[in-house]
Image (cartoon, rainbow, N blue to C red):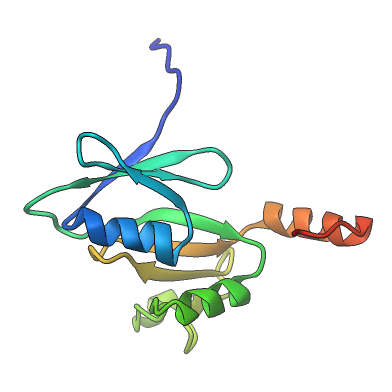
Length: 143
């Protein structure tokens, strides 16, 4: 067996500067371009991912990164307000509504794309719901 100290995900993009603006600006994540020109992305919960430049980049046709959210409707509103389109699928198999949210087929989920065309999602997170409910019951606020 291999002793593994940590793990992270990586994916390609065609424009590091555009990825930095999107992940750092539009999504509000902590990002930095390292000395190798790779975008390091700090994820909520302590994980991280990297986006690396690839000249012949082809967008991933599958979801490369899922963001758990307490309220899917609020998250979609925030994405749309930032100019991010969440209605990317018209295929009836995805069962999305006019805002791009698929409901009742597992966790509620909405997909969107980064500037390189990679598919991302916001997905209703039961753990986030429980934390939000616990905070409301205890009178705690999120400042």
